[in-house]
Amino acid sequence: MHRHGYKGRKFGRKTDQATALLRGLMCSLIKYQSITTTLARAKEMRRSTEKLITLAKKGDLASRRLVIARLDDIEIADLLIDVIAPQITRNSGYLKIERAGFRKGDHSEMATISFVDDIDLELGAKKKGDK
Image 1 (cartoon, rainbow, N blue to C red):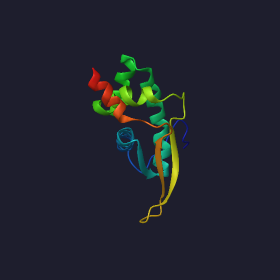
Image 2: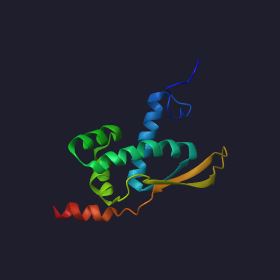
Image 3: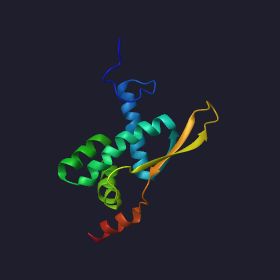
């Protein structure tokens, strides 16, 4: 049996569990701007997160609804669309992955994933206060 048409890593989980894992990682990355996870998870998360940021940069209603649907968290989606996306000036390559050694327990390769551009969350809080 061939594996044609199957994209992405399985992470040893069922499909819905892997989707929930990536969704939680994306929400944490947007909330904290930098997270440390395994290298495989970081690489897989980068694919979907960069597409999500591109959608958020559009900023129209349809894009906002798609971002909310993919993240399942309205506060995080609003943070991404209203605060983070306007501060990103580049067209692609929004995230960087830096290797962070090996985990002590099982020797898995760890990585830190973060935004390439500096993000100022207080800037978004000031704009919301002005309204």
